[in-house]
Structures are given as structure tokens and as C-alpha cells.
Image (cartoon, rainbow, N blue to C red; front, side, top):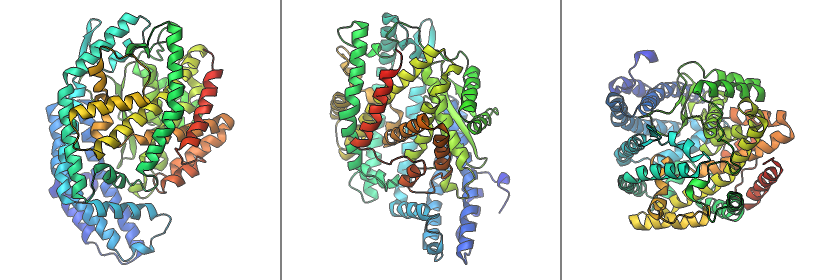
Length: 560
């Protein structure tokens, strides 16, 4: 094989001979099969990182046409070929007479997942997936272009968030209306994009022999350890346990504010009139303070975080033309994480920073696993790595705040845990309905959103803004680009809460459990990953009730 650095991974004519070499290699023993898997994985890692960095460049600047073209060229010309070649290589693995001689424990997940991928693969679905990727980019372009003129300047949607935290109610109302009006301008095109996505996904499912996309995607996501019925049990648990607590918190807020009813702009500010939490002015301050937090939590995690401060692994500020949201992406070949976010100086930015750092820690812990397939875990467990960091850093918020403000930050986060579980149930229930009813009309979709909102939502007065409420789902990126990627946050939040309770009882044991489970990457089935960290893999009523009870008690004991 040629040295990797001499191969242009954006040119299929250079990639194909390398992959053909793997496809045609003679394998004469289980040991040779293992060597083949590892060498193929390293080549895949090189190609994967090339595509990943094209995506990174595109999200960092959605307005640069050359960058966008480079990404689309990879999507159009390389990814379809990789899908076809990947299927052939998967078949070589599964059909190899020595695959049954591989270690049952070490290779169970890989062979199980590969066999499912082979079962689902249809070449006619490749162009459909390519079209979905392009639609996702169009959605990101529209979102990234959303700005409003407010307070004398042009501001991004992310930058507008700070105005919903000020104490002046008229300012919050004006900010909410400015953002809502701007989002509504693109609501019709967002609906059109989503409708096209639903059609394409339904066709993918039919091509693969499924009656609907939900059932298809559960298999495609290798959800061997839970079912749609388990998700519905989670929805029920959230409705009966989390939603009442969320509404109690909102009712207490209404009373303190002495309002007849809560409006949408009444949820983000401090009910006692204190200035909004502002952990930092500049991104560099956030990075330095986060480093100190992690060093105090764990010298090992602190060193992991500092390894990201190399000038190539962080893009954290918010700016026009930058895609919204945040993510951590592992550069598979160099084995270095990359973190993307849109920081504007808010407490949620700090939470995003430690969250994405948790993903990076997971990547670093797992990066020595020989199989590239195992260096990432199921998303349900990846999010444990991230969400637990949000809670395990509670004791070190004094790097940014006074004791009073640190307590405020903890209270806001714990209240946010309750509300995010309700939001997760909302998004997940919405997707279950969307894809099991693919022929629905736009009006039916909006009405279903309102119905689900009544089930899981806060008690807000939406009078005068009913049309905006009906399209509230459009702000959720996952619905467009990452379908059915949301229940993972709920499952993971319950795992993170368990690690938090472990940490309160014995920090050393909790951090050992964290590291032990993260080092496994994706090499074990999902329940075994939770078990390695001494967490229960369960998201039914009993688990939700136990954990939310702990949150309620903590909130009751925190100073106001």
C-alpha cells in the first residue's frame, strides 16, 4: 500500500486500488483476518478524517462557495463509492471462513453490527442518502444565515440568547419577537425541506423491506438492546414524573414574578432580579477556566483538555455564516478530537464546553482500541460521557462564579435536566409519529406538534403566537439532519445522573467507573457499557422516579 499521506482521499481513482487490494487479499487464518481488519480500519480512518474535515470547514464557514463545493464533491463522488465498497468488504468479513474463529467477546459487536448493515444495504438507497445530506446542508445554510438587527447591531440567533436572560421584561419580549419573526420568515421553506426528507427516508425504508422508517432506523442504528415500546415507556415516565416537577418549578416562577401567566420570554432570566450569569467575556477565558475545572476534577481529564488547546482542535466563537449548534468530532486518523460551538458568553456556553469536552475525553480514552469501529460507542453511551461532565463539574464552578452564582448555575442546570427530559420525550414522540404516519399533511404535522406539546410542555400562555408555536419543532437540528438521534440524550441523562450520585458518595470510585467504561469505546453491547460504570441500563418509571427524586431533593436544599 502507498503511504497514506501520498493518497488523495478526495479522488476515488486513488482510493479504489487501495480498497481493491483489501478486497482481493487472501486470508488464511483468524490471525490474518484480524490483521486485515486493523489495516483496513487504519485506511478507513484516513479517508474518514478527510471527509470529516471537509464537513468541519463547511460548518465553520457556510458562506464560502469553494469550501461548500469541496464538501459536496466528497458527498457526491466519494461517499457513494465508499458505501458500495463498504458493503463488499463487509461481505468479505462475514463470508470469511475464519470469522467464526474470532474471539466471541472481542468481535461480537463488530460481527453483529456488520451482519445488520449487510441486511439493510441497498445500492438504490445511496443516491437517496446523498440527497438527504444535501438537504441537511441547505437547512444549515438557512439557519446560519438567520440574523436580526437588535440593540444597534446585526446579531446571530445564538447571540440573541443573552437578551432573553436580562431582567428588563420589555427587552426580553422584544428579543423573543425579533427572533421568532425571523424564524417564521423561513418556516415554509423549512417545512418543504422536512417534507422532502420524510419522503426520501420513507423510500429508503421501503427499499430495505420495512413498512416505515422508524422500524428501519432502529435496526440501522443497531438498537439491539431496546425497542420503540421501551421509548414509549420512557415517554410515559417523563410525563408522569418529570413534567409535574417542571410545571411546579414554572408555577413557583410565576408566583415570584407576580404574573398572571408565564409568557415565552419569562423563562430565561433570574426570578430574583439578579444580573444574568455571565461566566466569561472572551472565549479564551472560558477555555482557561474550563481547564482549571478539569484539573481540579481529575488531573488526567485536565491533561486531556489541555491537549485540545493546540490551535487546531477548537472553534468556539459565534459569528455570521457559521453553522448553529455544537459538536465534537473525532479525527480518526490523527486520533485527535475537534470541538465546534457558538459561544457568546452565556452559562449555556460553559455547559456546552464541558459537554463537548466529555465527548473528547471519551474519544481519547478509546483511541488506543485497535479496531476503528470500536473507537466510538453507541450514541446512548457517548452522551453519558458528555452529560456526566456537566454534573461532575458542579463543585468547581467557583472558577467562574461567586458561591452564590455557582449555586444559581447548579440550580439552573438541575432545573434544565428536568425540562430537557421533557423536551427529549417531546422530540422523540414527535419523530415516532412522523415516520409511522409518513403521508401526513403539513397541517396534521403542526397539530400533532401542538398536541405533544400539551402533553410534555410547560404551562405557557401562547396567545397571539399560535402560529409560531406550531413550527417550534423547526429549531431542532436533529429532526432534519440526525433523525431519531434524540432519545439517546434521555437514556444518557439517566446514566449521567447515576454517575453524579456516585460522585457525591465517592468521587474516586465515580471517576474510576467513568474511565473504565469510556475505555471500552463501543467494544461491548450497550448494557455492558453501562454496567462497566456501575450504572443501570434502564429508562423506565422506577429509574426515572429514583433519579428525579434526587434532583428534587437537591433543588430543595440549594440556596435560592
